[in-house]
Amino acid sequence: MHTYRISEAARLLGVSDDTVRRWIDQGLLSAAGSPATIPGAELAARAVELAAAPGEPDVLSSARNQFTGIVTRVQIDGVMAQVDMQAGPHRVVSLMSAEAARELALEPGSLATAVVKATTVIVEAPKG
Image (tube, rainbow, N blue to C red; front, side, top):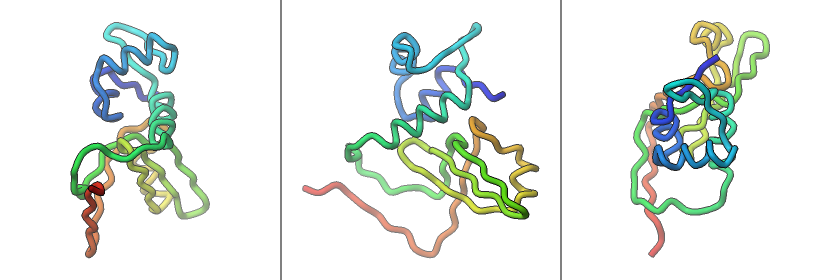
């Protein structure tokens, strides 16, 4: 089972360490041990909840080609697998061979990086 320290969880969710500690105090996340660690599957569920929350980004950015996040779902069917990740507010879905998913030991709560190669990149900025 994968676990994450408070600072790692904060970085992956795009919030401060203090926010993660408040969520633990409020019962939104659980933590155990010293130093405190959070179960990866629970962190993945919180990432999905946060990504579903409405709102527009408050920063100007151009997405990069690498997205580090938490695996939220792995569905293996025959020779293919679908792997869903949450990287901050971004949901990334990858289709790969079942063999590759198994070799990478991907499961909900795993830390992973999606590397995207595309010929088209769209840059967006907020209105106004």
